[in-house]
Length: 315
Image 1: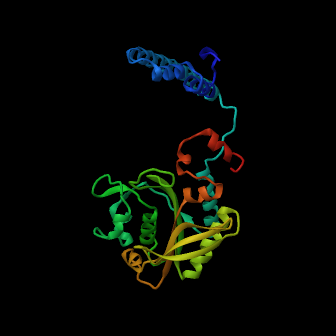
Image 2: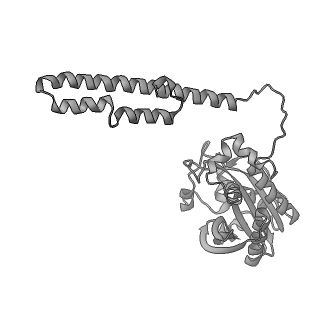
Image 3: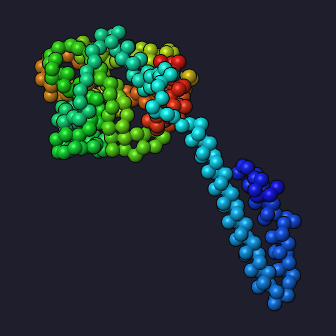
């Protein structure tokens, strides 16, 4: 096959193998130089170099031609006219679908939703949650500060501190769902920005109430009965604290952190009675990845319609 007739990269690969392979002109010259008189070797060597140089140039030009056609075809097939009226109905983003599932369960079980700015004060992001200026827990979260007082919230637990102060000495249950930010490197399982659901329930509550809540919540969101198990952990705003695993599709998977709210947090909010509280923080992306079998967190943020269209029927 002549070079002009080659249409694919695979055909080009075969041609290159043939050029360098057994029985080719190049091989004949290489064999010839071995047996040639010393006076002829320089001439044959130059011929070999020129032949290889010309061949590589032609192969590279052909490869560029083929790749340009591939890109052109891709653009032709994937091009979208943004001025054309929409004829297809859209769907919800998978993170929105999962967030709504959480939101439904919370509201059905007596929780109210808290909303607010993604810019938080150091006081409510850290200090009101028993994380003082020199607390080692600050090293666990490399935060994105705007100035000495303000930062992009690293969790939604700041809502808990605000609701505690607003409803001091009262029983209540609230949740917050929204973006949080960490100065983190993006990779397959980490993102500098992600979505978190944060909950707290204040009153005559105990660890069994927390266990029941998490089991029922996760079963509802995943639409399948799940078992949970708890492992001791540390969070400055809960004591005791646990990491929570769920058994989903016959495999144990770590999904969230939780615990009984530290009494110091209640005191900082002004509580003077004997009420307790439990709290939990849940990464929405983590749950969506488990539920839909997604292996790379970055898929949620690429806006690739081929990825998003999978969820039209789900929403």
